[in-house]
Every structure is written in C-alpha cells, then in structure tokens.
Amino acid sequence: MSNVSLKEQRYGKNNVRLFKVVRTGKWHEVVELTVCVLLEGDFVTSYTEADNSKVVATDSMKNTIYILAKQSPHVQNIEIFATEIGHHFVSTYSHVSKANVSITKHKWTRMLIDGKLHDHSFYRDGEDTRSTKVVVAKTNSKDVSVQIESGLKNLLVLKTTGSAFYGFLRDKFTTLPETNDRILSTNVDATWTYNIPSVASVKNIPFDDIFDSIRSITLKTFATDNSASVQATLYLMAKLALEKHSQIETVHYELPNIHYFEYDLERFDLKNKLKDANIYTPFDKPNGLIIATVSRTKSKL
Ligand SMILES: O=c1[nH]c(=O)c2[nH]c(=O)[nH]c2[nH]1
Image (cartoon, protein in one colour):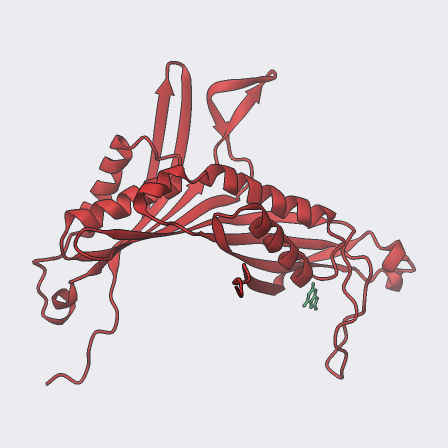
C-alpha cells in the first residue's frame, strides 16, 4: 500500500490573453483580459495512475474561453463572463465539481481628440487593473452555487500632506521620529466579496457601478481623510464601502506604505527637516504593508 495520498488538486489554463472588439458601425469598443480557469473534480487517477481518460486538456479549456468570448455579449462585464465560463465547465462535464475562474481586465481608455471621443483609438491611462475571482460549484446534480470576489489592483496614489504618524510604541528598537505631517503613498490592492443568492441573480448585480463607486470611495477617502495611520485610513475606506453597498459582504485592502524620507541636507547647510522639507528620497523597498478585511457585524437579534 502506498504511504502517500493526493491531498488537493486543481488544474487548468493560466494567462489566457484575450482581446475583443465590439463594432457598432464606426464606433468600436475594446476589452482586453487575462483569464485563468482551474477545474476541480474527479481527476485523481490522472495523478495517481497516469490515467488521462477524464482529463479535459488545458488546450481545450483555452479554446473554450475564446469560443465563449465570441458568443457572449457580456465579455466587458468580467464578473458575468467569468460566471458563464465557470458554469459552462461544471454543466458540460459530469466529473467537474468546481470551476475557479479568475479574470484581470486591462485598461484601455478612449482618446479625446480635439475635445471629441475618438471612434477607435485608446490609450493606457495608468497601470491599475480590475479583477474578479469566480467559483462555480455543483451543490447537487442540478444546482450550482456561485461565489464572486471583485477587485481593484495597482492603483498608485500619493498625497503631500494630511497624513500623520505619532503615538506609536517606543522602545530601544525605535528610531522613527513622530510626525504630524508626512507624505503618504500607497499602491491600492482592494477586493470585495458579494452575497450571491443564485446563478440567475448574477446578471442583476451592478458590478460596474459598484466597482466605480469603491474606486472613488478609495480615492476620496485617501485624499480627504486626515490620516492618523495607513491602518486607520484603510478601515475608513472599507467601512464606507460596506455602508454604501448592501450587496457586498467583506472588503479587503492590502496597502503598502511607500515611504518618502526627508533627505539629509543639513550636512550641506540646507534646511530640509519638518516644515522646511521639500526634498525626499522615495523608498519602494523595504515598504510597510498593512492588510485587513472588514465585514458587517452580525446582528445579535
Ligand atoms: O501608517 C503607518 N503605520 C505603521 O504601522 C507604520 N510603521 C511605520 O514605521 N510607519 C508607519 N506608518
């Protein structure tokens, strides 16, 4: 008898690059995605007995993504498109119990030329991306459940005042001075989860509006909060997002603290400390990293 066993397995195609053009006469819309599909189910013997008979080739999964992209009117809406992909795999193959579909949407912003939106030209307006992770799972032979997480990644922000950091623990390891006015910069990575009652309800959730709203709550809170710390500003962002959107259950932020330290110019008889500071060294490494998940308090009733 073997003294090892397979604990967990999933497989699929990662980094499927996809671009779709939707043409309405001269007016063209574009969507560029990176898709990952990982299947779970009765694939154990492909690992333990080298039996490929149930293996859906990852190449076929790639083809399926392109075919569904051709047929679906929802490719721009990544949460709905990911649900369609996941639903396809669990409903087509009886031995697939779960499909994990992740999609990243890359930004193409329409050009404004001579004050007019251009028909067919776009530019990359920042490196931030929109993403989703959808899990479609069989609950019994007929029904499926859907879990959806949406996210915003790589949104680089900076403010030159309105941020302090003082009152922190001081001991023999501490050298950082307290400050009531510092530069604050972070690269926002936010995800939020939805309460999805059924597959049919997915089409009724305004994912685009909620994404736009959480993005603007994030930016506005960053800009206007008189920040006591990254921790306190993070919590406020998440709280405002949860208060505004009843469809979401949890909000998770990962915020690096990208430090900008005053450069020591006193050595050259130049004032560059506190109120006189205006020359800094940006340090991308090492960085602070503040991570938290915030959810609604369960009612005690
Ligand atoms: O907002 C901050 N939170 C910290 O936990 C921390 N630690 C540190 O050195 N600087 C900061 N800033």
